[in-house]
Length: 254
Image (cartoon, rainbow, N blue to C red; front, side, top):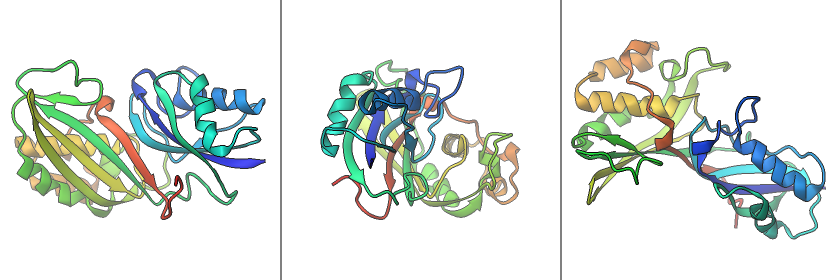
């Protein structure tokens, strides 16, 4: 018996998120079916964390235990023959049995992608969200700093979420922009130790409300300090969000 780690990318558009559920097709379901085809038995595939319905991943990390005759680095190729075209294993390696893909994770980075333009571009809409007008990058960067550090993000979590604590540590919130032919492309990169359900998408919505003048800096401070849900922006659509990478304090995929 060996433990394998997988670096997985997927387009989340057609999936109900990572975790298996009764009424939707999920990424975990497809991966477990593919892994089961190789191991010859039902095999659980565990991820570094769950992504929500419609959210994408460029660097999700998963693991499973099993016996496969092909070398560990070739497991990716074997799985990709079976997997649908919107899921791909980028790398595969053998890892020690004390490697816990979820609990060993130190940091995760998400990117929320936006494009600011007078008109919508359908070629961008699958992985980014259209905003009319021009971005105020200075205001976005200014308010981003309020989220950094350890805070109670109760106001940024979907109501009714079943979690032990809503306190999370955010290491950085970075705003990058570039000019494109059809407008300005903006990426908001959020690195944290862990995230609540809808947390990044609500943070981005709050940043956009502040930059547009719909929320004040005091509103945003109050949302973090008191959990006031009336002081946050809307939860942005899932298609703009991508899990970029997961850090473990050591290199897993050499």
